[in-house]
Length: 365
Image: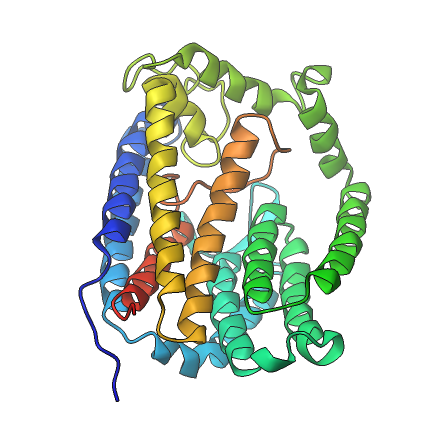
């Protein structure tokens, strides 16, 4: 007997499109000064954002109408392709260095970020693997180690770029899928301790990461160096108050705050739209996560449920890290705010993943 299909969850579509609209407006507001200085065109980043937003919406409506079981058939080959791209991007002369990380493939201003594709590829593969071998997940060697090994290999390749932020999102979403599939909490706790030790090792191994940690604890120790971004972000948020300085009236975007249109766009939102604007953005993300988890709970099978959990986990972890960095709760990591920050690969892949989530919501029980 086939699955009965209904209309997609409108409460997933509405917050996604509203967040995308806010993002387009705020990308222009945050980037116009920078774009005019660098390219002589204040609309430069807005044009790019509109192009990728249109491509992402097309991809979202395509995947919304493709049966999610298709992804189960191609999950393995998708993961292999993602691993190949992660290896290729590390080759000097092929991988493009931006922001100190060799994480791009492409020519000129346009390119793709393989680590973004890996996040979705990992979600699809782990969902397939664990839905087929769910009875083994409580066993440490046969059930838990294989998915952890695959996740660890992907994380290692991403760290060679290096891109700690994207790696953290991949690990967070993957561990959520593994936990929801029935892994024993005791096993995960032991591995968590090993992971913390490894994380500390990564920080110690790279002096710039250690500087970010110390700057996070007290950014005023090095206000013109490692603590600069955190301080400027707080300088943007503080004057915003309840209602903000007004749309387009940011002062920090005048070459004070680095990456105002990408990693620190929430700072500009808080500065221009105030506490109310920032709260609205968080409310929209909360609605999206709530309805995504509802789709996971009511999904017709384990595979669909795990995919939904992974997609929502990916979005939620990325939002928490990005806003945590902006308000000074976490060390600075280069990670975008989903649907809002300027970006190509990230925006398109996020909208594509929401399309898969919408397709799963069409088969809710």
